Structure formats: structure tokens, C-alpha cells
Image 1 (cartoon, rainbow over the protein chains, first blue to last red):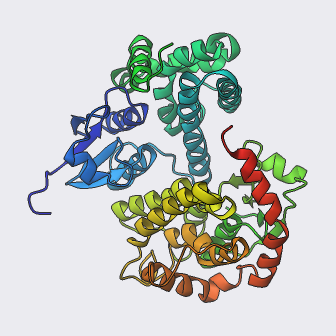
Image 2 (spheres, one colour):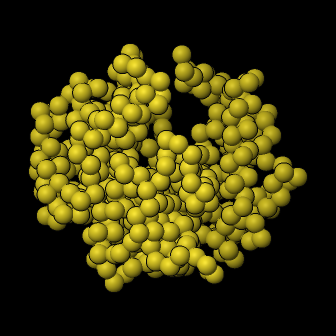
Image 3 (cartoon, rainbow over the protein chains, first blue to last red):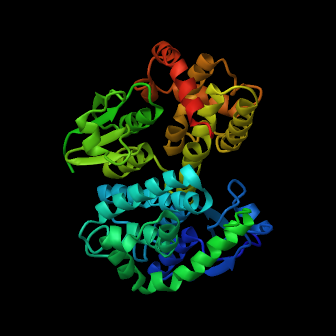
Length: 223
Length: 227
């Protein structure tokens, strides 16, 4: 495309767990890219609006100027467009289906978590119950394994790890402790945090908690 | 891998149809196991414990829930005409719009049918805007997939067959030739396709099935409304 920037550009936001999925994926594959921090609380950039007109959201991966949207789709795209780099998804079709299922399921952590810090009263209580169910299901799927697919860090670990710095905050709003209720999941989170690609991409829980307070103010929530 | 292929599904579910049409397009013989969603079977609950929904694909001792995951699995596990495009960017685009159908179209579509007044107007506006966006993907093409039916056609298939039946039951008009010429043309192409026709439920049967449940849908939607 004439005039389009060559190579990979990631339109992202510092604390976005969805963006972090892509950063981890790019690092695991050893791919060079330009990171482009986007404005989400203020006006969105023209580039973001042009690249993702439907959702106006990050992350967006630009490859030679062409946009790919949605974190899990970006990860699939990276595997398919860069087949000579280490694969993020397993090769076997059934393993791929299982990986896709749990990666997509984990989106609920953020969805439900947002309801948890935003809502109060009965609605917050419902969000708490939903979060307990989601984390219980993830813990059940992990079981006693080191990682979701077994011995090695894989697609589901990559998809879920970015939500881990949010869990202490969700725990405060929901009145639960991940460490106490789901120790295997807590241990898995520490295991992932020790991986370089993950450590470099995630924000510490204190920064995430600060950010939730910023979002609360932005929504007019004052407690 | 070998092993019997079965679909746990329901005749009135467009999601169940996605699984069946994918298998038929790929040329994979299968057994259809109808599920009574009002009284869920142990088989379903065993193989889809998280969501407890149809369809579920059984392939030997493997169980795959979620219709779009099933379509991708069928494409990857069996030989036959490809369902997803070859090019990575085109694949990403097809997947994006399939998710758009599920995440942005199903709910406002359903709610625009069973609500009334200003609330209904709001949902109708939303679904009409989103159908217009979806339509851009089939403009100038026979199918969303190009010359042949593909992944996005399968994902959008609910709008090809179920939509007009539900419009009739609800007394609502969403898709007109005048406003959506490309989408309406695609509806005809999709529903008259030789392979698709084999697993589309009979229109009259679907019509009477949904008509009998109309009051149920209306009251369920009312109870979902924020208090």
C-alpha cells in the first residue's frame, strides 16, 4: 500500500490486559514492532479511529498499514503471518479448540471484574458470585498442572496472565482472596510472572488499583 | 484421527445449524443428536459443563462446544474444501466479523423482537446500524466468503433463515430489499444453496415453534430488563 508504514505497529494502552496479551505474544515470537500508546480517556487518535472504526478500541495490530483488531485474533494472525517464529497456539486441532475455548472464556474475568468495581448493592453481589464461578472454573481447568496445557507455557496462559494484576483489586471489591480460595491459580500466576515476556508486559497490582480509581472518578463513582 | 462424528444440537438453533452446515460443506458424515433444552441431558452436561449449551461436536472421544470453535475445528481436523480463507489477513477479517455477529448483533436483534415502545426503537436502531456494517462485507460478492460459502457465511446464517421467521412471529420488519440490497441478495443465495438446504429447518415448523413460544420470549425479556 503506497505510503503505509512497513512492519508491525501495535496500537495499545499501557494497562490494557488485552494489549498485554499481544505484547507477550510478540515477545514470545521474537517479533520487532513499534509500540504506539493511545489516548483512551480523552479523544481517540485519528489513526485508531481509522484502524478500528467499529469498536474504536485497542489493541490493534497494524501490519504494513493493515489493521487486525481484537487481542485473540491478533495472536492467531501472528501465528499465521509469521509461521517461522515459535507458535503461540498448539498444532493439534483439538488442542487448538480447547485453547481457544479457555482463552475466550477468560475474557469474562475482565467483564465481570469491571462490574465488580463499578456496581454496588445487589448488582455487585451478583458480580461477585459470577467472579467466584469464573475463577473456580479457571482453577478447575488448571488443576494441578504447571500451566493450562501441561508442562509448558502456552496460549491459555498467555491469554489469562494479563488479568492476574487485577485480581487483588477484584478481591478487595468482592471480598475474596485468590491466594486463599484458589491457591493453585495464585501459584500459577506467580509462575507466569517469572516468565520474561510476561514480566515485561504486565503492570504491578498497585498501578492497576490506581488506574481503577482513575476510572471510577471518570465514571463519577466517589466511594 | 478417526471416530464417530456426532452433533448434539437443536433444530431451532441457528448455532446448531452452523455446526451441521460446516460438517456438510466439508463432506463429513455425522449423526445428529437432538437435545431438549428444557430438560438437558446428561450427555450435554457432561460434554459442555461450563456453558451447558448446544451445539457440541463429538468426534471420537473429543467434545468441542461453541459453534464457531466447532466450525474452525471441522476446518482443521478434516480434509475437504476450506471454510476459512487462506490469507492470514482475510482469516482475521472473517473471524472479526463472525465475532461481531455474536457480540454485537444477536442481543439487539433478539431484544428488538420482544420489546415495545421506546426500548424497542432503541434496539431496532442498534441492530439496523450493525446489519448495515455487516452488509459491507458481502457487497459485490456472492457470499461473504467470495464465490463459495465460507466461515463468515456460516456465522451469519441466522440472518439468512431465522431472521425472516422471527420477524413474522414478532410482527417486526428489519431487513428490507430497499435498505439492505446486498444482504437480502445474500439471504437468497445462502438459503438456496444445495448443501445448506439439507440442514435448514423447515420454515413452517420453525414458524409454529416460535409462535408457540412468543409469550415466553416476551416475559423472559421483561425479566431481563434493569430494575
